[in-house]
Image (cartoon, rainbow, N blue to C red; front, top):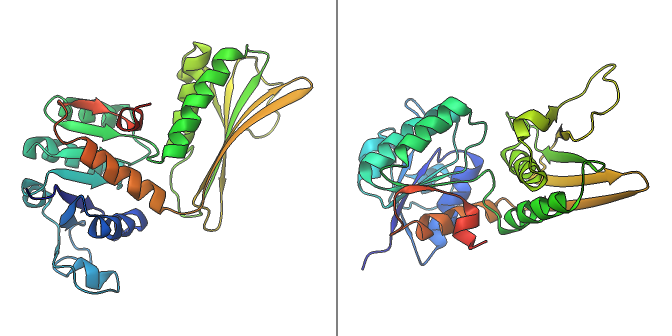
Length: 268
């Protein structure tokens, strides 16, 4: 039986190239196509050569529908507008759609939800095992502490990241809100500047740092009078996200249509 075929969208990006390397090194999946936006310099060229290595026999295309038609899964770390388009096309092809794109807004999520009625979608702000364990721990700690404990999610990423807070930070904030039994939308405070006044009791704050080549660092701070608890995850290698995404693509084979996350994939 053939190994599941996977398409990588945004193949020229940091995560795209990491995914290409991960899939080609895997003995459980095969790379069947790579997609880039129309007009990109990689279109029509072998992806391996584009990455500075040996040919892989996979030509980069700007036709996602054709690419998805020959795949069992699509791994997508691109941009919100592109991800929404890919969700509809992956559903049409009945391919598992693994979404690592961040910065998705309510309108994007509604379209992704509609696509999930026809195909398997695995969407997560972070694909690593460690981060998903941290999410679970955050929920449990928040449930154990009352609103006298201030919660702050502090995240750091490389200078090129375009959205803030990160998708992972929002996952952690959502976990804290669920643990506390409140709506994150109501409790969230993002960014402070000037005379802000005292912190309001029960809020969940977000602080974002951007600089250098930081892969990803996330702290969840629980602070009360006289004591603090800090939960922390540090990513030093982007391959952890690629491994998680490939694992999600394989897990999705044979699942019923619907929207899942890494908690489902990891059995957490």
